[in-house]
Length: 376
Image 1: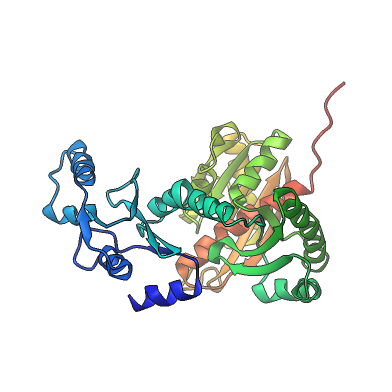
Image 2 (image 1 turned 180 degrees about the vertical axis):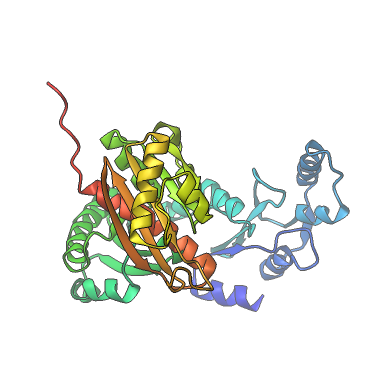
């Protein structure tokens, strides 16, 4: 309760995630009722909804789930569409608390469906017309500190005013995100500010760090690669060793992947590299092996592009190479190349970093190829 009251003392609205389940430690409802100084009422309609949800799954509802139908008096209910715990909109004087489940996909659904519209309506009623918009530049291949140095001059200038802010978000195996946030009188002004700032920041990053920006907002590496392949009318096949199918798994996350993704070979054992992909016998953690894997899978699956990855995930070394050594091979329309990487972290991280790094090698190569003009 103290945390709730402290947050409300310094904010007009608060979002609480979690604590709405049916177990003894789910105390969000009771805490909100105490902050609101009201009792909890059991909502019979919610009881029926939760019971029906269990019955449709062929299960009997435990009595504990009745707790999820308890609502602080005066609170509005956010109906569930994906689970059993409803959300709550609780007025506390002139302020508001939104309580949502901690399960991410349930929480995000309620935020988009109920919380955001409610916040916008409260803003309208308060006569506030300013609009805040954000844009995220997604990068791979540079550290957070390197990005900060690349845009330091612009960051300092914006700190003195300009309607836009810059923030850096480390996102693990998805790289570093550069978030631009603009405040304008309306959508058009905010979007115009973002467009201008994006152009400036892109130029600074690309001048100092090269082609590390691969997408915007929700564009994942695999979606960007897919768009490039489709724009060029090319198909792709992959040969994976240490990643064990992680590259193929990411690629098939893209809807319609069957139009451009031919398939993959998980050539984990050296003999599979030799016998299936035609890699010459010898060290398999090498640039030559990576290129042979890419060419082999391209021929085997009859694709335009072959992408491969071989290396040492650890903890022991292999072929005289230390853990974290990775070779990415590429056969693009018969032209072979490879890139050597040394990736940090334990075995799972090396495999995950190898996956996105291999896709990034392909992205950069495709960006350097021009789309052929239409025949006339």
